[in-house]
Length: 187
Image (cartoon, rainbow, N blue to C red):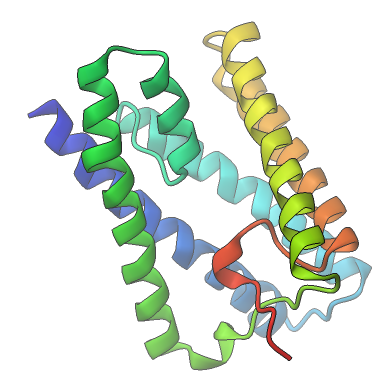
């Protein structure tokens, strides 16, 4: 029963994560009417940090539910074989399905949100840069889970600010957003 609850939590949290990204943009740029200047991007960054706290709290109350396959994969690799099979066979597919359902629903309800950032460098450089930045995020998350056990606020604060900083760095380097689903390479 515990695995079923985690799979359902992974599906729902992944679905909500995709929606939260779209709703952040709509809230900051359409509802508040802020542009893509420094004020609008600062407000978007603050909303993003609050959003990361919300999803960290969701992960805590669901006892391990997550939206990112890497966060469940690294614990499965270091665990036993049954945990690895459950993660690869059930949890990660649930996260992928939740994200796909979320994207399809967003595109059907808010079609103009589908035009994401454009990759400003060639595909190989962009993939390498985004991969290295994602690796940095995973390393920060791993070191936080090992070095600061139990302090929810401090871990979430450091993780969210570092993810935001790497996201800003990545968008300046490649134009991407460290999410291959929303980067378009076609002109």
